Length: 398
Image 1 (cartoon, rainbow, N blue to C red):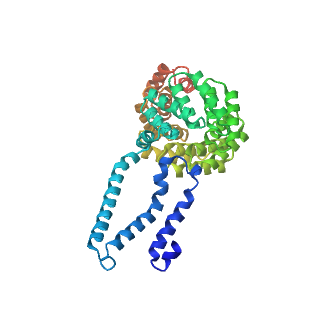
Image 2: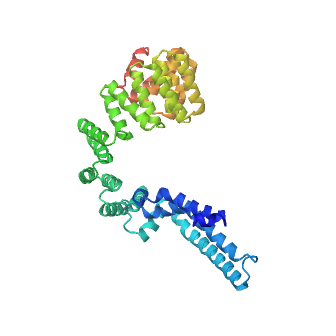
Image 3: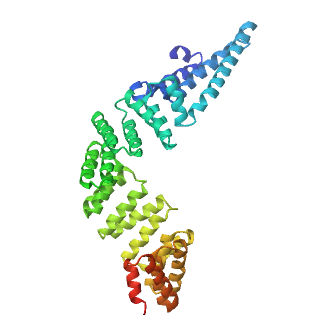
């Protein structure tokens, strides 16, 4: 047909080529997935069909080609009917594509066996706090498709929300058994083990999760944290480095990798990670605080002070930045600046014994014994066991 029409009307030949060429990539139905997504896959090929239909209607309504008036009127009427039908279908179908929930509702109505859409519905119900409806959708998905790993994991999450940890663990073990290449059930079991304080069991489960998926970001991250906490810095660095490769845009990974490198005295690498975190999250204070702390560790007090000042100006309600600014300013003999910053911290956190003790020390540095006594004694009432409070009390004259 393409060859036959090439000499007569190349636009028609092109429409045929367009249809088959753009349809070819989605002819592997097993790879394409759930049928409801056919609208997405067939949208571009359908342009060729519309083009052919338009060419046909246009030819039949052309006075120079068709002399019978009734045929021209009939073709024009057919074209209008097709246009109206397509328009109505678009407006009827569009609401189903508003979000995953509406798509899920529409799809399970037409195809109750579409397991993945039961998962979508369950996820929405769970976010809304409707755990019972979420549980029903997840159980339905599992019954329809034992390989629906996300349904198992999310069902376990609902059971955990209900406080039923043993049932959640049973569901996750079944998921791990049915899905031997899926890492998430083992990761979730590891998190449960961590919650009950079984660090070695958690480590084993995270490692098994990585055997299934070496790029499982969550397992890499949790293992990195465990290694960091245990002082296994080389191992922690390797794990966080792998996590950074798996997810280069993760601020949390950058911060933890930077922390490990800082502990190892690899200051250049640590600074690079904190700078990368700043680029990824320029409005978050955590990367700036980490970089300033790194400068303090290196003895670059002025650079650290400048960063604390920057955060304090841009986020005056940040107690962390104000506190660190005050403490560092006090170390550098800048009593006035220290007092100003620490007074803001006390205003933000009036029950912070540490902040009041540091403010008292700043007053002592200024020579204001009365104000120093007031703040240090207030700190003692709040937390007499705090080391900074004890130190401030020793410096306070009887």
